[in-house]
Image 1 (tube, helix red, strand yellow):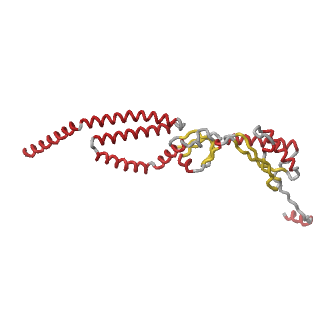
Image 2 (cartoon, rainbow, N blue to C red):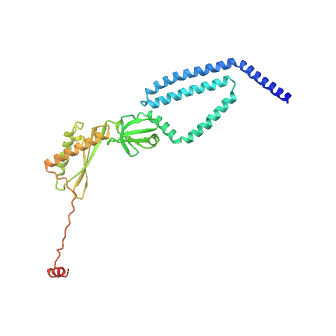
Image 3 (spheres, rainbow, N blue to C red):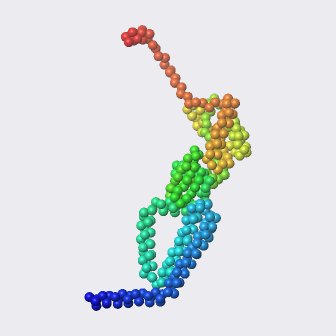
Length: 300
């Protein structure tokens, strides 16, 4: 028993001596590895600041610039860690770390598939020059002003002041109409006048009213006017003209103003905008037998 304990103790001493000897031999590499990690830390902080400033010049969203800057810093630190492990001749540990990182990354990617897709979509949207905060857009059945673009969602403020939060993935995958990309919008009005109206006078009066109402319309020639159909109770027309506008609210205000002024002009000129009318005509005269009617009432 004593011999066994003595042998085990001697083996332990030999192991410890071997480890101490290995540590002493690798002290220069250990110091160099520590210096590499410290240097990578300070370089990562510097890279973080530089990348943040560069990204802020192109992206207005603070969350996006912070995320990109942090990713850059993490890449620098990870590169320093791998370099330090290489200096210490821990290639097996380096391989294990890479394999573990791959497996962990796959598991995290599957678990956070929706979140990551929204995050990457937010990064892509933040770099798109055709979508900026303050633009008036229409997408996914909603229309409003872009209030915020972050790593998770896309926020719109509708005309009724309600906020709509849409996942970034849906914005990227679906069509989007941006009213703010152009400085002009076309207003289209449809109306009808009575069959007794002078159609040439209607056209002239409508064009004059639009030209006098909006400063952007320089002359009557800038107003498009087309009679479109013989309706049930009116002759219908389409009137179109351009205004300076960048949002749907401005377009609605212009349309509202045009309708008011056209109605005033028609009332002054005696032009009728008829209600839907249905005329019932009986060609045969109904003969009523007074005797049979009196008999029916007496029976009741």
